[in-house]
Length: 409
Ligand code: PMP
Image (cartoon, rainbow, N blue to C red; front, side):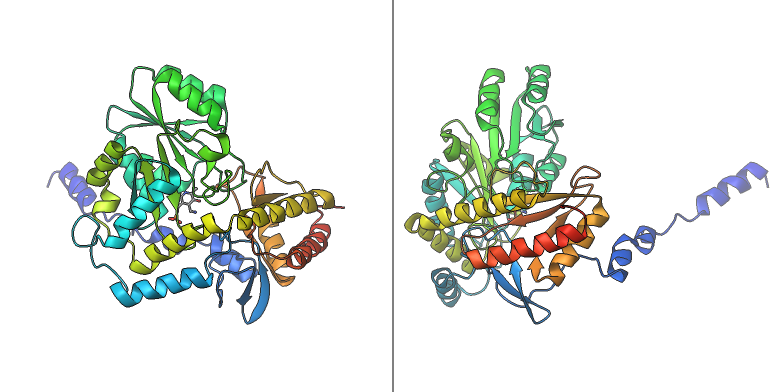
């Protein structure tokens, strides 16, 4: 046999490596576990409240997005229970086919009124909203322009679209304008987080909206961390800046202030109608369960009836911001109830989080690549329902751990 033929046939039978090899090699998380420094998938044995139970022990929760403290509110729970009694546990199908209930439609109308847009469309998670909306709107000749610090669901929505993806430097308006200029002749969608989820800073919406007008782009704001938090009546970033009519699409999730799971997009009737027929994460996924729809509806009522909750949230936020600054911590650029403390290397974040846990405080870490190298964070966030006494305990724990870690003097 010709030696070249032998070689070719050997190449043909050469086996590829096992696709699971990367799993067998992945040891970073296991290393943290063996050091007792693994801060993920911690198991909680109680409701998301200012105090939770972990390993049978009471801890103060400062790692929750339950901003208004509504996840365990009696009216919210009652609404969920009543909905389960009437409609059962699930819808067994997508909104598109058998899964649309009267309460889905009612919630859409209520959300549209709340956000002051013509129409709204509800999805089963906020993540799915961003996947479905961006990929439905951005076609192959279009450009989607996003902030580098936008949420993962926005990035994944862009990846699913057939358009070109351009990222501008975080909150850098000159960089945004550079991209808008370069793509002046194309159809463009700018997508930004209203409040950035890692460090709690607010998007520069007035500048973004005016640049969008100048270059003919549409604007979509992800208000996951702004609904119930920002604006005079908790309607989010656009209300905060008085720009409700200037923002084309507002996305929200129920997994924070709205006390449940699911999400929505609100905008003009024609655009929502289009999204309804092209968003694959809506059409090919089961609809939100009755309990969550009813919970959100009840949470919206409470937001309107009890504005003092938002005031308490901001009072707690100011207390903690001043408290951390007073202790000498490096606090990131926050303007909201997400307050992140810069701790340096990733390992510092893991160690600090576990020392805080020892002190009875549940806080989250944000490490690279989610944040820049050397700028790992302890990410904290507050609820309207935290008491002064609980927050003072948190500050005392941070003082003790911060000194041990050399983060403060
Ligand atoms: N956008 C932002 C900014 C978020 O923080 C999140 C949730 N972490 C989402 C979207 C996704 O929302 P959900 O939890 O409803 O899937």
